Image (cartoon, rainbow, N blue to C red; front, side, top):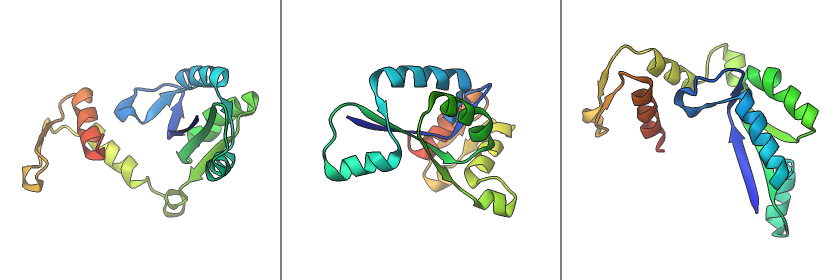
Length: 146
């Protein structure tokens, strides 16, 4: 078996907004469980095993998308201490242009909106309630196809 986990944010305190964040405590627990049942390998080794079709056992690779600051402040100390290989996909555009990723801007707009209902019928997307955090989460999941 080969599993590849993809994370975005591991933060000290998570409001679990839009299911993009994992709290540091939850991440630590996940690592504890993963280490019991899997051999954690670098992504490049996982790709090589897939290409060769010759893996036996339970392997897992951990990846992080976008390279948020919390990767350095929260994740790195843990993975260094646990000696875990991780793969990071860094999007340099926000640093070069000095602004948020488009998805982070969209999430901020949705999170901060005071609009309680969004009518997207003209785009064949229906009507969405946005009055609560749960309703906003459902809307974002619908947008992302989940």
